[in-house]
Each structure stands twice: as structure tokens, then as C-alpha cells.
Amino acid sequence: MSRVRLVGGTITKTTGGDYNIYSDGNIVYNSITSVTLTSDVGIIYGEPKDAPPLKTKEKVVSISSELYMHNNQDLKVPYLDVSNILTFKSSKPFIAGIRLIFGRDIKHTAAKKLMKDLMNDTLIRPKFEIDETLSISQGGYYYNGVISLNPKLILDSEKDPDKAWLLFRVLMEEIGHYIDDLLRNKYDNIGGDDPKDEGVLLTADFIKFNQLLLKDFEFAKVKIQSVDGSIREFSPKVLFVKPNIEEKAKDLLFVASKEDDHGIVTLKSGKKIEVEFFKIRGAGAIHESITKRAATAAGIKYDSRLDEGCAWPDVPCEDENSIETCYYNTWDNEHKKGTKAYESHHGTKQYWHSMAPTGNHTNQQIVDLIVIQAKEWFKKGLETKVKDGFFNKGDDGLFHIGKLLHMVQDSYSLSHVYRDSNNRIIQFQGYEDQDADKHGTPDKDDGAKGVQDAFVASTWILSSYKQAKSYTDLKPEVFLPVLEKYLRTEVYVLAPNRGKVKAGGSLDAYKKK
Image 1 (cartoon, rainbow, N blue to C red):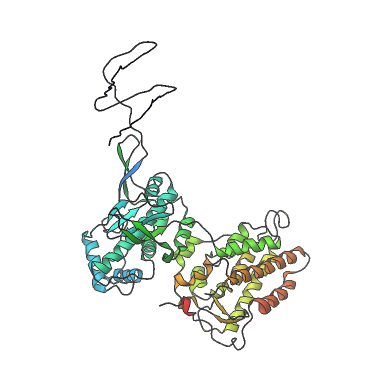
Image 2: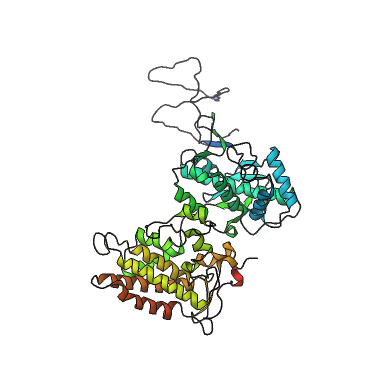
């Protein structure tokens, strides 16, 4: 690299300290008149001194990872070796898992080829590259055998446990996209892409199989060029204690649909391609937003009790009275029958979300179940004593009211309840009949009519609760008929001739394919 400067006038440099010049080659002064060197104390000649180290920003030289590449390591490929969990050796669990994650169109032969390469440690590794152009919200992407990653995220992962956890998820998700590419284009020629996000599913399966939420673990090797030009190495490490198990489970439970994650990148060759990013997002929930607004309108302080309560039906703890949510419990038990997590999302308590529970229920029967549950939570809220002053430093009863608000708010979601133009209920839908990604689509529109209806109902419930709680000399049962009348005549009004219709099914927009 060289620089030429042409100046038609005079150059003057003034420094407040020393002025040093170092060169690996010659320093040449040329003048057509004279070269003048002056000093107040003298001119010193001597042997050249070493230049101080050149200081630059730290730079990621390389990153590599063996995650999901073979089984000869601490972190195992799920169900690759089943000798310790089955009485006979079989490839069925592995192949079934692969087809569940990557799509039913993946052939057994392709899954078996992947299995063979994993077992023999002959899987072709992806290339890992650094992409300096990625924004702060883009963790990485996969394209044509190459996983590209955000260098700032890698650098931050050395000292920040939260960023190490994030980097691990980015790596696993992009490895998932790489495995999907192999299954569809190397081990077979079907091409295409499953509508589900295979990277997210593979990550969850890998974490659960290896119980990674319960321990510390390293997952990659990084080479860094330090500020003095030297090369050092470190291994990013996910810690058990930070983020804690609840925060990790929350990240795994609530991921956005991959339709939001596509964008254009420019390769080194100059070619522009569309890729699927790992998108880094902030937190946020529609129930929290509605409840905050309603609490303000009702003159009630929004604190941890309402916050935990309005989220509880999504992430329930086994103890219904503990003022907390259980993200890890939900993530770990969602598919275990008999647990609160299972019953809430897939079983007999789906009416907590104003949806059709398992079994044969009519729309009218679901309204009755909802009203009974609403009265129970409202009564619990009233029976719970206020601590440290009325609606000042804390009313634990608001936790139970938050659960009620969640149930009512869900009734205005298009993927939960189908209403007519007069807001009367035509059908309670069934979650088991719906695509999980499509199910959450209506909750992304904070300006939808259903959101405003949910806000109005939530404000009424909170205002009624506040008024009822102020009558300390009256039993809670006195106020329950008023709540029931409101729910039956304003919120859960059935359209004509729909009460005896069997609940369940789904609108086409949210159906499973």
C-alpha cells in the first residue's frame, strides 16, 4: 500500500508532544534548495529503535465447530446411538426424528446416508466464514455449504455469557440449514424447503437430548487477531447460571416465524442472493401490551403480579398459586401428558386460551368451562389479601386476575375464536388442527380490531376487580354473578344456532397442511 500527496503550497505540522517516524525501509528527504534541521538541545544520531506495536481493533480470524458433525464428542447427535436406550439397536428413532425436523418428504434412504456419515465421522463439514456486513440484528446465515457469522457477536461471546448463548443458537440453527441442504441436495435431489424452521427444531432437539440447559459447555473454537497483531484462541462457553434456565427456555419457546427472516446479501464475488438470517430480536408480547394499557385505564399498577399472571397460561407452573411463570417446565413438559404445560397447550385445559380442549365439546360447553374458570380465578384474586396497603406496594390477587385476562384476550384472536361481524362467536378452534407458526400470526398485529376489543374487556375486568376488592366486608361470591353476566352477554356471546355445534377445527388461514 502506498500514498502520494501533492501540495501546491506549504505544509505545516504542529504537535504538542513527540513526533516519531518509523520505517521498515529508507526515509528520504529531497529538496531543490536546502534541508534544515534545528533543535534547542542538539541533534542526536544513533541506531534505529523498534517501532511500538501497531494497534488495531481485534479481528476474528476464524471460527469452527463440530456441533452435530459426529458422535465422538461430549455433545451427541440425538438418537444416533440408541444402544443405551433401547433393548435392540435400530435406526428408527434417528430417522423418525430427522423426518419430523426436516420434513416428511425426506426419504428414509437420505436419512440413512446422513446417519452413516455421522456414525463414521465422514460428514463433509460446512465452511465457516466471517461476514463484516451483517448488521447488529443479524446473527448469521447459510448459503451453498458456507455458514457466515457476525464477527461482533463472536467477539462479544468471549466475555458476555448472554452472547455466548446467542452465538450457540445461531451456530446450531445454521447447521440445521446445512443438514437440510445435504438431505435434499446431496443425499437426494428433491430440493425444496420444509415450511417449518428446521434450524429452530434441530436446536431444540439437540439441547433437550444433551440436557444443555442443565450444564456448562463449550461449542466452538475461535482464533482472534489481537490489537498487537498476535493470534490467540478461545472457546465460547455457555454457562448454566447465565442466562438462567428460565431465560434460556423462554428464548427456545418463543421464536418468530422464519418468514420474517429473509433478506439479500452480497457475496464476495458480487453476486446478490436471498438468504434466511438468524434474526436477533427484542422481547415483547401482545398480552403484556394489552394488559399494561388496561391497567393504566383502570387505575391499577402494572407490576410483576399482573405480568406473570397474563403470561401464566402460556407457561404454567404446576403450582397454580405461585406467583411465577415456568418457561423451563413448559419447554421440558409440553408434550408430557398430565402436566400443566401439556394440558394447557394440547389437552383438557385449552379453554385457558379460549380454544377447544381435547374431547367432544360443543361451543356452549366451552363457554360454560370458561365462565367457571373465570369465576374461580376472580374469586381467588378477591380472597388474596393485599400486602402493604391497597393497590400500593402489591396485591398478589392480581396474579390470578392476569390469568383471567389472558383467557379473555385470547378469545379475540382470529386463530383462537372465529367471530361474525357482530362479534358473536361462530366457532372455538382447536390448536391440534392448526399449524404452530400460522397460529401466532394474528398476535403480531397490535392494531387489529381484536386487540382493541381485548383491551376494552380487560379494562372492564380490572375496573370491576378494583371496585370489588375495595369492599372488604363483603364475601367474594357476591361479585361473581356480575362477572358471569358480563362474560356471557358481552365477551362470549354465541351466534345463532352455534351453541350445540361441536367445537374444534380451524379457519383455513391457520390449518395444518
